[in-house]
Structure formats: C-alpha cells, structure tokens
Length: 135
Image (cartoon, rainbow, N blue to C red; front, side, top):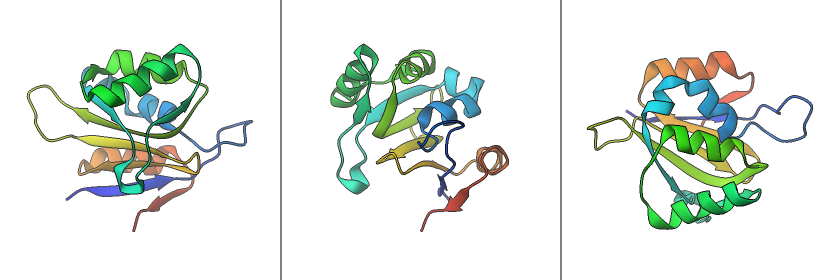
C-alpha cells in the first residue's frame, strides 16, 4: 500500500524547505536508473512551477509532454534550477508499469515522497529530521 511522507526540513543556510533536489540525491542510484515523468500536482490542481533559467523551462516543457526522461537527465535539470515550487516527479523502473516512487514539491512549503517501498520510507525518516505522515 502506498504511503506518503511529508518532509518539512529547512535546507541548511536557507529559508526554504527541502525540495526534490535533496530527495533525488537521497534516492541515489535507483533514481538515476529509473525513468521519470514530470507533471503538475494534480491533487492541488497546480501546474509545474520552477524557478530558474533554461533547466526550469525544460522541466516545464516535459510536464506538458508527459514523456519519460532518464533519471540522469532529470537529476541534472532539477539540480540546475533555483527552486522547485510545485512539481510532481514519478519514477518507473525498467519494464514496470506502476511507479516505485513519486516525489512532490508542494508550494515551497514541504516535499512529499509517496511509495510502497519500506526501505525508501525508512531512508526518508533517517535522512530528514521533520518527517510527517500525510493524512
């Protein structure tokens, strides 16, 4: 069963919460090997909103295409942005139709990780200090 954790940690030396950049880094090689879809956050009826130059534009264009990109490309683009305000990033492992994890940026207020993988959920709890179960 899918579970959603909210991460409310502030980034060191900044007044912004953890965003998908930190979560993708935490997910490591598995995230790099996966293929990813970029979308707006449907449950809040919000389109992708990312601050930055060319990388932000490319991510926003990807959200319109619903095509999958490599974890390597997604990581590069996300790390080149200044901030992901709204966005949903869904990972698929090779040959799988169901996603193994979804990472959401929620209005620069928190970041969500949704998965049924207990190892990922445990890793989120160990990595970040302010983790809450989403209602």
